[in-house]
Length: 181
Image (tube, rainbow, N blue to C red; front, side, top):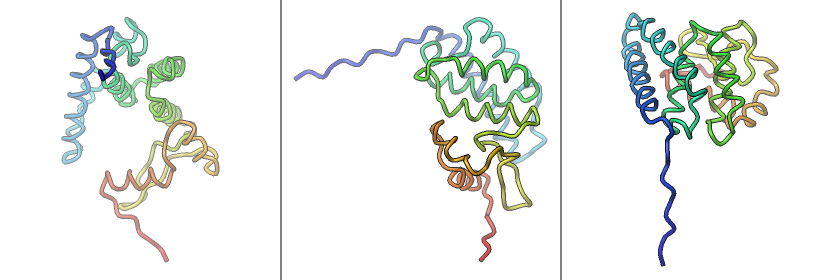
């Protein structure tokens, strides 16, 4: 019996996908260096990446899966997450992501970008994806709207609970929660 052939993935803009991959590489290399040296942050990398992403969005719209592939689409989202210096552009990209077909984007990325934009606009976040340190060994969501129902909202966007997310955040940043009891 023959296995059915899977359809090859066709990306409409492979050159743009490659460009996005190079942009996210420089973004991530800088952020890795920042873990050891906070002075390693170079605003010109974020500015250059944002300018290049703006040109891409003007040319093809939001980089959805069918345009650049799943990996490059996720990388474009990461770059816009790091474009805090241009909240207007972040908000534009958020609107484009919300209009995209749901099977063409990672829905969780909408939640992260929505919270990022709201925090940058000094509004309460909805999904609790943006955390801040509390002292040296704890963290909490920044300015969270309606904390009682946050897990319902998170679930609707394919996210885990706020407590699970906090645990992951603390493990990633090697924080040790102080347990009272």
